[in-house]
Image (cartoon, rainbow, N blue to C red; front, side, top):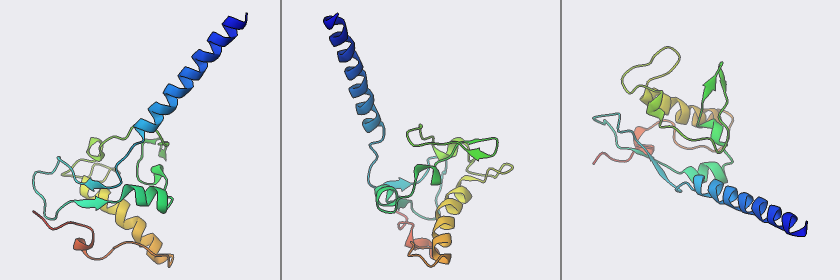
Length: 138
């Protein structure tokens, strides 16, 4: 009986450890992510170096404020869900119904958040000049 309980405890502990490690590995995201897409063949401006860690950890912005999966008009994305490329839903060339084209989706998400913070008289990132966010084109 004791051996069965000990074996069962070891199995449960092993599953918990592997699950925890899997979650940590899956959420291991670089501190900075370049916002760019292979969906565009040419760029007018360079990519935007997005400080993911600063936004998520320092500014306490939740995953669902940027990442989304809509079902019946509601964002059902939750932390730990797989992250799709934005171009999986947002066409680079044209908006389709309520789904904005890729560039507009990026701008609405980033600039919309910054402008809302600015309006609320909170310190925010750039909102007016393209080169405040975009790197110089190489």
